[in-house]
Length: 178
Ligand code: HEM
Image 1 (tube, rainbow, N blue to C red):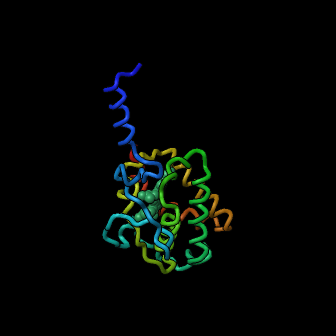
Image 2: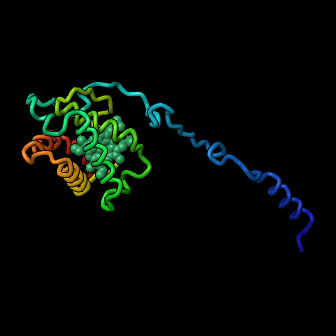
Image 3: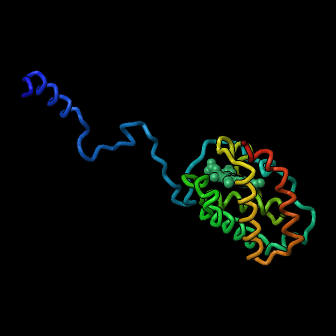
């Protein structure tokens, strides 16, 4: 049998328990993230925008962008690379919980800028963007394979594919952290 004082203590605890419909995020101080109604992206912490964040200088060969189908073709290849990576069991977990709407846009801008197809890159620099993500060389290889698959699907000539990969290769130093 419970003593009167124990029963009173239990009752007090029950009364303090959060009511049904409690906003747990608010109770634990979790910030609510809301997508921008226009862009569909989550906000990010402020940073300085600069084409130098793209990690390499743009191509000086005007034929290269055309080999990728111009700006629209490049953006489709970037989006496809992200989709293949999200569905790739080798690296899907790294992408889970990140904003794929933003990544498709920023990767598209980056590739478009590097191929000199008339875009500015508005994303973060490679080191900042991949900090604390724990990307390995094997993860990078998987992503590059997905980019190659996307370029192949878009019938980008092999030599042009390799010109883009050569621009991206030195960035592995900033992206691979373990
Ligand atoms: C040279 C190789 C790579 C390039 C050029 C690249 C490019 C980018 C760009 C442009 C962004 C967006 C930055 C921004 O939001 O401001 C980004 C973010 C991201 N990248 Fe990469 N990336 C590379 C390698 C990788 C690899 C190997 C992985 C994982 C397997 C990866 C996973 C991610 C993820 C999850 C984000 C989202 C970060 C966030 O939302 O905070 N990236 N990357």
